[in-house]
Length: 298
Length: 188
Image 1: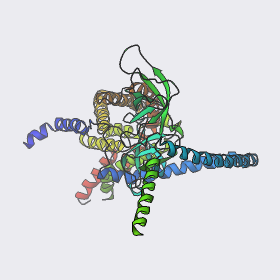
Image 2: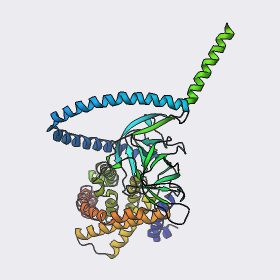
Image 3: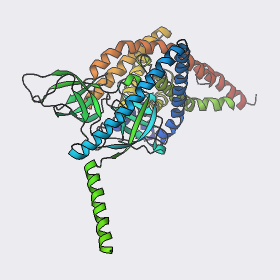
């Protein structure tokens, strides 16, 4: 037996080296998977280094920029004071508009009002391979981040958390091949799934050929799948190719988020989706019940 | 004794160095335009292993390196193991038939391997049914990526050569170590 093993040692090793990677392939490419124990050991070494490099780079860039900006600081300062005054006025006006808007929404019970619990995080690294578009953020399980949480910015959807460690998390962005976000066209309410293409654009799949989709249309998250809150911008339609036949149309989407300038993100840890009208109704109900109790007591 | 310890520490330290290399690569080349000239540290380490290690040791190191790369990527599980192993075995086979007299030939081999890796990844992703549009991205990156890989490989191969020398893993240092162990055994 040992003689044969020695004789065919080369072929046995070769066979094992071919077999191990093939058996390791995960065919369910979209299924979320978390780090194993030994992965976490490696990440325990690499994550702090990534954070340190990221912070150092930021410091270098900001020092350089501060030096450059110092040249025209006084002039900019005056401009900023003026801009600040204007913005304060705008904020006051917007707050008034917001209040009015809330009242109208409550009256019409037209749309759900979402409140989100979020955790702010900084991007510390990107994917090791240019074929994939994941990013790593500096917050993890210790900050309450879990797999399949939505990651957003003020501009729109960034992606979803697909792996976590204690102090870092990997986010698969909407540009990634493995990303899929259920979306609707804001104007026509046409539905589809936004998938990454690795390049700077995504594609809207499964949009029917008869759907009204035009370049410039805004795509928002549909809220299906319970990962992304409803109504968050996903991107703008940049190209539509509608053939004379077939079931679907080819729609190219430019993400709402500028990934080349992505530095900070918000991880949505909880979605409060209690509609305003329901909240108002429940409050009225509570008041009525309290009054009834008071009357019966009397 | 210290020399034997250094020789034993060669592989774990090499793994650690690759992990550090990936950390630097992913953090330093995170934003454009630097992301466009991102080299692949793992690929260079894999090529190095295929040329300077025996089949078993090199293969195990390749699997470990590929796993480290995979945990820093959103690539489907096993994709990097397959592609890096393909490069490892491909380079080993090529080294059997090709003569690599100097560093220039090594650079060309690295460039070829970089292209092989990208094509292997493209084929694999297609087989998994995930990357219908990856060919465009691969075409853009294929040649520039190979050139960058070749350029950075020169310095890294030198550093790895030196590392092997320090840890008594290079053939020359290995002979010296074996002679010393033999002399010690004979009481000299």
